Length: 231
Image: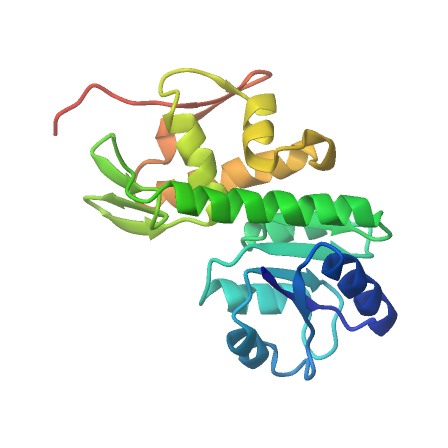
């Protein structure tokens, strides 16, 4: 049974989400003290976090930063605010998905299932998988990229995007294919979500000198470039 930490201060909404998720055999935990979210996060050790943006004490962005500094656990944001910048901020902080309130519970369930399937089925299937790419070592299991200039850790979304692109080096992977591979059901994904994730991946790769090897092909998709080098 997957454990889900639901960080939501609206008690009626919390109860409804908990009831719906319980129908799918998910074990849902809430927060008792919103000033000690990280303590309760550590105690629960969840497989997935669903977090609202507007919370007492500190907002969801604050707690997302805290969680990401300690864990790669998948995170889904909830928001009643109709600001595109909220979704961009959530994705830049390492969130895996974003749900706008009010929402249909079927959509939330579909997103939860897609994220859990992508993260944990992928992790179980890929026991020992390493790819050498432009003199860098990409470890799909650990979620790391090691280059002579250093090592970076990627989120689940970032490493999965990179894996799909590296399966087709020097070939264009369409946006539609990436969305399908990442979220399984493209009906529940905005085009902007993919853009934010790829841009975030490229920015991380730039830290070790590899950002230039992920190219955007306008109107087509993305390409991972692999040079024929032996440095």
